[in-house]
Image 1: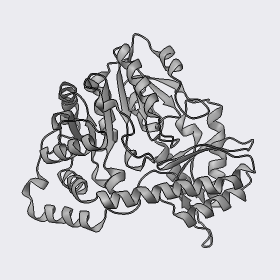
Image 2: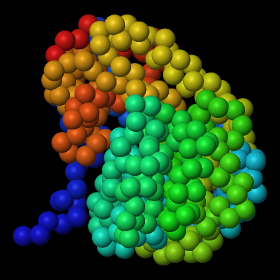
Image 3: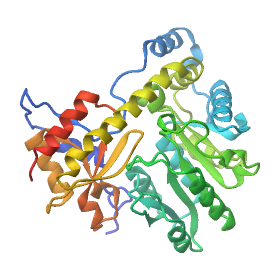
Length: 391
């Protein structure tokens, strides 16, 4: 009997890992350190919550259907913000709002691909990207990265076939944290353009990039919309995870195709979430700069503490934005170690097997550490526990 698409797709690693802690009692002196998920654990700042409450009470349209591609005010605000951030000229007609960045990716793939088409994605991959390709009947072509966790351009070119429709890049990267150099992004843009492909760049974590100035110049190309589709999330910037607000920048004719998908799936993004995102753009930039500084301080804490693990044979493969990606020195596989870390060290982190094709040997040696919700003391405690752990 033929399996349904969902039956043939792996379980979300976040859902699976939560099951590892169900029913487990953690000692009071060693509470659970959860470094498994890249999502803010705190609510939005008070001013944004007050703006949401005000809108809920006094704006009738906050409770009604709205435009499929989002509220005009938010599209304008985001276009202005992106134009400033990338030193480019982006119009509201090139911006669409979605119910989270995952839906932005889903709409993009729906507009580009048919049954049996192919999309190139670097591994380690963001698992929800792979899951959506599976659910769409689209073949994911894994693109290996080098020791620097950057995708090899020649390897990508070798993967292109007559069925290839797009190349996906995530920067700063999930799961490795690595920031892709501007020159590498330009090289992939040129590669995609030369083959008539689309370059999908997911910059969910762009607000926590350590570089100053535009992270790349792709939007400065006058014909960028013919090759590039850009994805973004408000969840990390303004702690709007539960409100599900993401965004796409693309050619208006491409957004027209995506609109068919979005109208069928959610009709429109959350009105309250959009109101919150627009308020955040106009009022929270200084606050967001503080959040960025804190994340970069936590990144530095990971780097500063890592020599203690390195002395035991661990390797730091990548670090940035919300993530560190590491290699362990043990004989046992990462998934087996991950489960033992829960019971023996009260640490929950995801094994590399959740970010790689099945059977990948490197994946069995790797972990992702999502450190955005762990302060400096928590990071010190994490390294203490890992240093004292033996599988």
